[in-house]
Picture (tube, rainbow, N blue to C red):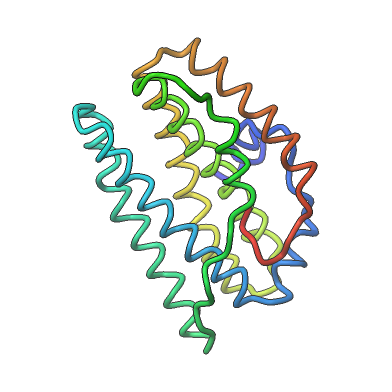
Length: 201
């Protein structure tokens, strides 16, 4: 898995500067708080997709267990905070996700909107996976390295699942064309966002 992620970088056009890890370690409670809410929002995104497209049987069957898994991840982060005598902070605005959402096509059909939503989810999971990989490799706390590795593996699977669902419903060619547009936009977005150690994205 590690070699595969290293070679492909999940298709991302712009890798994160490894020095981001140094920023993340300055205030551990902040990055853990953001991580917790990312897991929570991932669970609610899957619930929202199921509610919006209940007739898509494959989507419902595949995402239902992801809801449970993401909520389990949220609880894992809460447990890590407690173990370190830290507390969950307030949820903060996610500039990265909000700007990704502006790239979604507007005024389209309900079905076309599904492709946009699946690709946004895939991209968020891909970037989260890439960030967790950096933490698993470079975090100075050895116990956290193994902890983040588990999240990296999980996010890689979720990223692939969302892309597979998109290809199932919209075909490989159409999915790949739009996915590449998202990747190019995300690379530009990453160039224009100031790296912050209190954010996973």
